[in-house]
Image 1 (cartoon, rainbow, N blue to C red):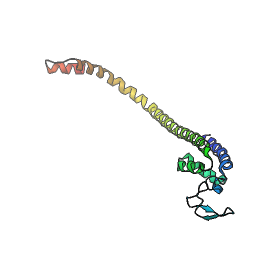
Image 2: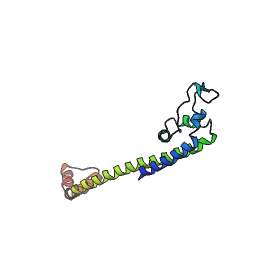
Image 3: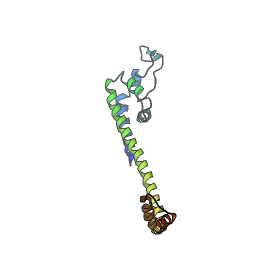
Image 4: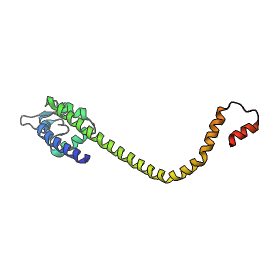
Length: 166
């Protein structure tokens, strides 16, 4: 169910970012410093950079990069050259997707710990009968040993032996 929520979040933000920032690549947002165009808008020299939001598949890949925080500051910085306000929707996506992924990791850990606890309860249920028999024989000796610890000195070895046995 968390995976489905994450897919829905990805799809919604991918459509939104493709519509909002799709023209950024053509406008030269991601271009290197030596990028120039002629009078027809064709690239003369330089590189236009990476097309982060030009198509839906590029946007989905970029959103995955943003979710994992891979080069997120560079994406925001380059997108802000054309759209100053771009930082806010991108940060909202990062926060939401990080929160969902954190919940996914916590759910997996809780499930693993629950399974481990169930296994321990099953194995301790089998050993509980044997432990009860063992405690029945050991308990009287434990009380005698406590009495033995409280006495500070024994005058003879016979007194020590009597305290330990009884």
